[in-house]
Length: 114
Length: 112
Image (tube, rainbow over all chains, first blue to last red; front, side, top):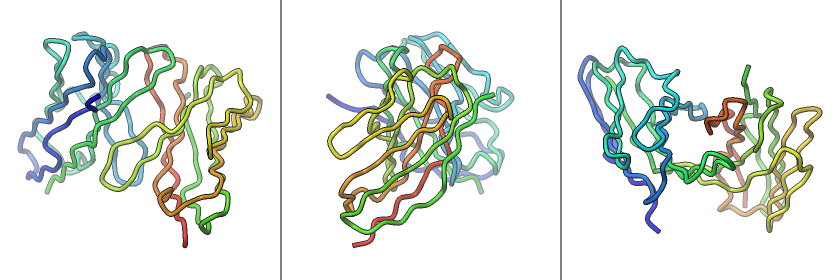
């Protein structure tokens, strides 16, 4: 069974530029999550999708971050414009069911904002 | 509110047991989880425990849950150098959405 795929693995941009990350969850997983992991901290949820609908985006900085999951499968997370404090690893995870929530994580995209 | 705390660092010798501790604040959590993160990789689920259980054993891993004190621990028996990684404790809190709240992670260093 293929795992959660993310691309790119690494991205370096200057502040005020835009960047987009892509995630392909495990086949059949209805729930998809984007987390931000700042160095030395645990992951923090940015947004959660159930199929193509948003379940929780309360921690998403909506003035600069956006995410979509148009067909209920792949998802993209965009930052526009980026700030220095957005430097982090962006992790995508998916799960089959919300009860006994076993989340499977991708390897993440490491973003450096200069 | 929701908060999960872990000690930051643990060093053990190969063959010894490791015990990683975690405290959480949300007593309405249904499941509690332990994840492992190796350098440059995503998080890998190690084990989880249902909140009405006190203990769960899975090969070299033993999870103990003290719900009264909101304390969770992960014991790794016969620790190997391949166990060196960052270990995260997580709870699912009271949101009912499946959102996980993670601790800041414990770095486990295993010396040969």
